Every structure is written in structure tokens, then in C-alpha cells.
Length: 249
Image 1 (tube, one colour):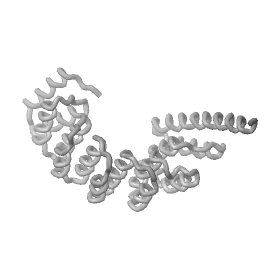
Image 2 (cartoon, one colour):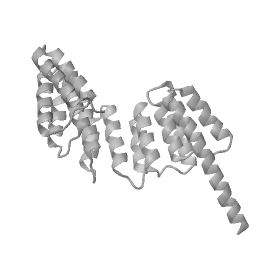
Image 3 (cartoon, one colour):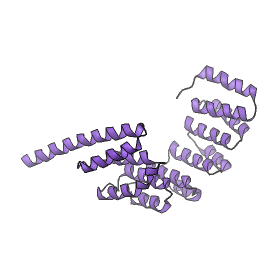
Image 4 (cartoon, one colour):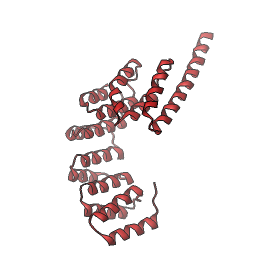
């Protein structure tokens, strides 16, 4: 009985300490202090504290797109030792990490090792395949998903845009039953990136007719489209809409 209580007390204290470490890591990540994140994570391990799922995800997300992304495989090895491989939260972060270093085989293996896959892990796989230019694999994963949400659809649209398949992106977009401001903005900005400025403006008008409210990212893309096609009148109308609707985040 006493031993059980001591174990419980120790677990609570360790848990609280882990939360403190996570708070520091999150702060360093937001400050984009990558060396600080790395040092803090290493010190946490040296001090004998067990990283949580949140710890691993925070560190991996901090390292994406930086020179520290070479540590993804080492962090994965630690995940295996900590028996966190079955975590959807950790698995999704590892999938993104391996996509960031271009390791298609590893990210596929991580996904396969997740026993209880959910929509977030599948979304991560779709986005990661798209990031690597593997559009067929991304579409295949999307097609067999048991559950899809607006993020799933938007990830597919964004992926096709980034892989220069704007018409395919619009085809997927048109099939979406539910669209949010992010979906509309992604498609509009996709047209702008591909210099299809009139298509962007037409879609913006369609967005307004649907009742969806643009945000400041939407307006920014639309103003770029106006500049791209030298439409002063449309630009003035968009400016009027900004003043009327405001720029919700």
C-alpha cells in the first residue's frame, strides 16, 4: 500500500516536471530558438525525465525545415525505446519529419506502425506524399480513408497546387461538400501563384456568393490577383469589401 502511494507520488511529481520542460520547449520553439530547443531536450533526458508525446511532437515540429531535421531518425529511435510508436500524435509528427528530409520509405513505415490510425495521421500522410511530389500515392491514401474532414480535402487541393496541377486541384475543390475560409483561400492563392488571375477573381466572387467570409489572407491574394490582371475597378471593389466586412483572422 505504502509502496503504491510512493510510486503514485513520484509519478505525479515526474509528470509535473515533464510539463515544466514542455513549457520551456514550447516557448523556445515559438521564439524559433532551435539551439535552445535542442539543448533543453538533451538536458531533459540527462536529468532523467521521460519525454511525453507532446515533448516529441514539439521538438520535431521545431526542427522542420531547419538543419536540425537530420535528427529525425535519432528522435524516432528514442520514440521506439520509449514505446511511443503506437501514438497517433507522435506518428503524425514523425511522418512530417521524414517528409521534410525526403525519406518516403521511412514515413510510410511510421504510418504502418500506427495501430489505431485516425483522420489526422492520414492527413499527415497525404500532405507528406504531396510534399515529396508523390501525387499518386497521396491520392491513393485519400481514396481509402474511412473518414475525411475539411482538412483532408484542403490538404489534397493544396498538394496538387504545389505540384503545379492547378486544374486537378480545382476538380478536387469542386467536389468538396464543406468548404471553410482556408479552403477558399488556398484555391484562390493557388490561381494567383499560377498567374491565373481572372480565375482567382471569379472564385472570390463565388466565395462571396456562397456566404463564406474572407479573411486577411484571402484579401491579400485577391488584391494580388487584381494587380496581376491590372483590374483597378476590381481592386477598388475588393477594397470596399475590406472596409465593409473587415478582415477577420
